[in-house]
Length: 173
Image (cartoon, rainbow, N blue to C red; front, side):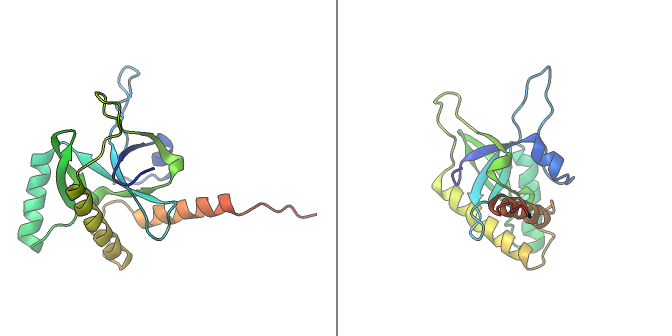
């Protein structure tokens, strides 16, 4: 996985971590999967096996209202970032970010025209990374109102899974 590129999460993840605030995969229609939502990834500083995935939405007008409301109330908003994906403005929902490991990533988002991985501008990357790290830091210090899913619980479960993979099983005689 690469920072600032886009990925899809497996259904297994949502079954294993049933949190009503996670943005779940869209249902299949007539056997066709929709591969949504898609997430922008960045690697955790403390635990490199964990990536934080930030969903994005095309409902820009809806999230602009939320953004303006937060600005009016708190004089800042670090839970939403606006930027372009494939030439279209999107809202990056830091408030809905979640931790994953490679195990739960199904595929990378590719540009259908060029067959290259989709990425975002440096400016948007920096803003998302800055705000995401700020929000995570605040969350780790007890401000649980910034992110909707219980991501610290999910993160701990993922770290436990990774630890089990690294710990060799020793059979006793």
